[in-house]
Amino acid sequence: MAKNKLGYDFKSLYPNHKVLSSSQFLLYEEDPQQFYMEYVLEARREASKAMIIGSIFSALHEDRKYNFREELLKIKAPKRIGDLFDEAIKKFPIVPAEIALKCKVGKWTLRATLDGFLEDYSTIIENKTGQVDWTQERADFSEQITFQAFVHWKKYGMLPKQIILNWVSTSPRSTQQIITFKTSRSVRAMKVFEQRVDRVIENIEVENFTEKFYY
Image 1 (cartoon, one colour):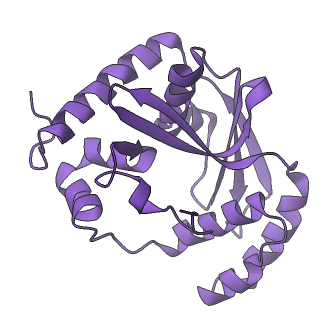
Image 2 (image 1 turned 120 degrees about the vertical axis):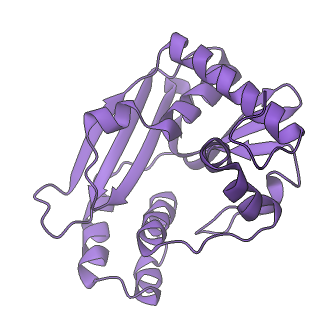
């Protein structure tokens, strides 16, 4: 089933299939009860305006003909956001976008949706928008990026050669339109993360949605 421009086809994920996205995985670790509410009962929280704006930019990055201004108008985003996106997207090279990278962990599948992916160069591209500053430290410790790197490591048996994070600042006070960070993950970090993956899967399989972790 095709993915909506501004969201996932949730039917392809848990609990319909043994497939976990990065959002599902990280939410389960943070709050199993909220995970149950959102993904088992399908009582999902309404997306914030900032999240929708980010989704609109992702859709534009995937399809340069996408009518992003119409979507921004629907959520009453400031006109300057549309102007910002119009200028910023010209600086992004056209690459394979919105790539669903998957790996197997036992009977389960982990799915990382990449804003951009250059498979021949083992390069992951992540684009962010928003007013909260992205820094090198934040990129280095991003759990979403760690998840993406792990899926690459499991699928290809090697770490990504490059992980690039582009931040498009939507703050009216910003003096820089796009800030780019390069980050990486170590094999040691992947092995530690693998233990977390195993633990999450074990807990979901026993339907533990009350305690943070079941041992």
